[in-house]
Image (cartoon, rainbow, N blue to C red; front, side, top):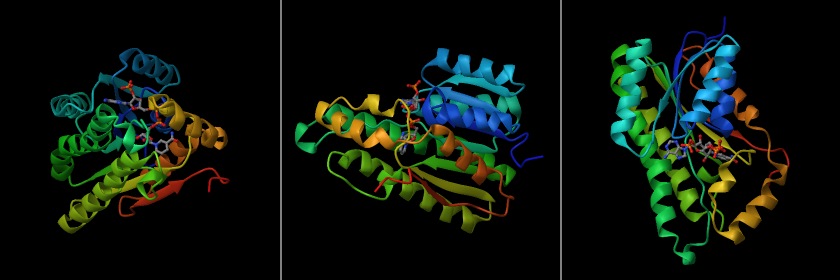
Length: 247
Ligand code: NDP
């Protein structure tokens, strides 16, 4: 039996792309999934597919920018399943543009979703994980959480923040002896709906070109499963997964 069977997993951004693929892989390995995102109909469709394949999944429509909704999400998981073993902070958006274009609303939303959403989710699950003295938090950063490129300034800033949050959390929990593992996952170009969040035509054209070599979301899902299924005293802290041809 895999180390994933029976684990209760909260997964944000489960309605498409990497989140959807991860839900399917973890469900096939026996995880009990709590699927979160804003588009409820997508989540229900995914839940049905998982259940038809003999898996377990429940749905909780959630906007990660709302701290109250994140607290409700954790409470729902605890009420339904009695524990939270794994949190996957996957929800994210990537509206890219050069700074001079002053897409200030997009900066605000990106910071709210990509940074505050991650923090609110961590805040919501840490108390019960610390109490049970076990847990695993995986944050979807990016190659953009390690590198910086023109047009991606704010997105890179948010993903560098995610990388920093992962490492800070890792150190805090390691020194506290809580047995909480932290994994920072950094994908390169992956086929998903992410590019649709870029409204600037010039940036979108550049991204469309760059994403011609994108890999399937399933590859990231398998990496996430690999990190989760390690023995509890082994923590995979960082994974960078990108297309072989990505420079
Ligand atoms: P998708 O656009 O396919 O999925 C993004 C998910 O985030 C959706 O399920 C969306 O659901 C959810 N989401 C967006 N805003 C919110 C919100 N306010 N509240 C709750 N959920 C929200 O993109 P990917 O699957 O590619 O992205 C997943 C993660 O991977 C992101 O963090 C992204 O930055 C990261 N990543 C992706 C890469 C790629 O090339 N695809 C590369 C590196 C990192 P809904 O709209 O229903 O709320």
